[in-house]
Length: 94
Image 1 (cartoon, rainbow, N blue to C red):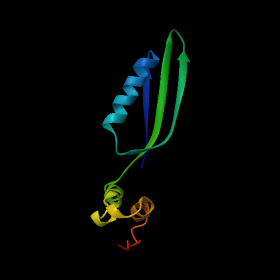
Image 2: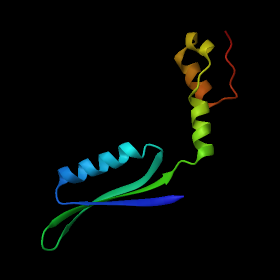
Image 3: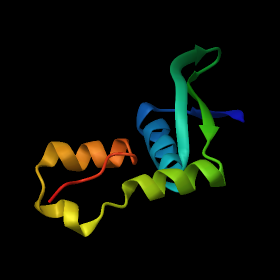
Image 4: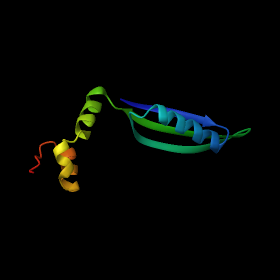
């Protein structure tokens, strides 16, 4: 499911802190798009939006499974370890 988060602050520094804090609390998202705008009426306001998708439980489980590497792969060349992580069908020959 796609969602949007909008931030509005009076300075770039405040905006950066707000965005970084929110991102730190929401690590299980995939950012699809973002943009910065400056709104000026009576005073300047810095606006930032993030369009994101949450990672569902099934997808998160698959990613965690792919991140687990068999201990026997530790002695194999690095490119083979990467191949095992990205393609679970690959077998390692010792």
